[in-house]
Length: 116
Image 1 (tube, rainbow, N blue to C red):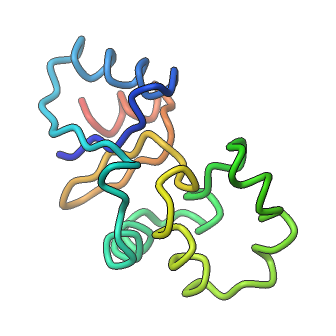
Image 2: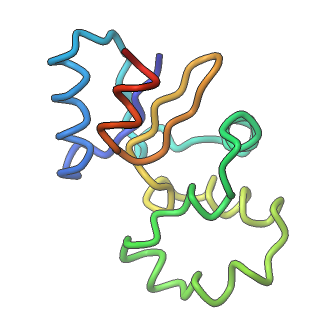
């Protein structure tokens, strides 16, 4: 299982602590140093069953600076995925990815249900 995070993010820190406390094995990946590729994002999006908007870090400064709230509705899914692949700070984190599931953001109840 891959745990994709931004180490300075407090939510990512909480999620990592939770994984460790529950003795769940993972490989950590720094989302900025190893930004998800278009192919990965497309696969994760397809596997997740979530709306593509859920993959955007809507509270991030970059999202706001780029005025994506207004721009996303006019963009195709392909354009949105390409945009996500340009900068890890646009991607909502943390992400947990394995062969079967994709969890976006840390919601303890959801993680407990799907990972334990």
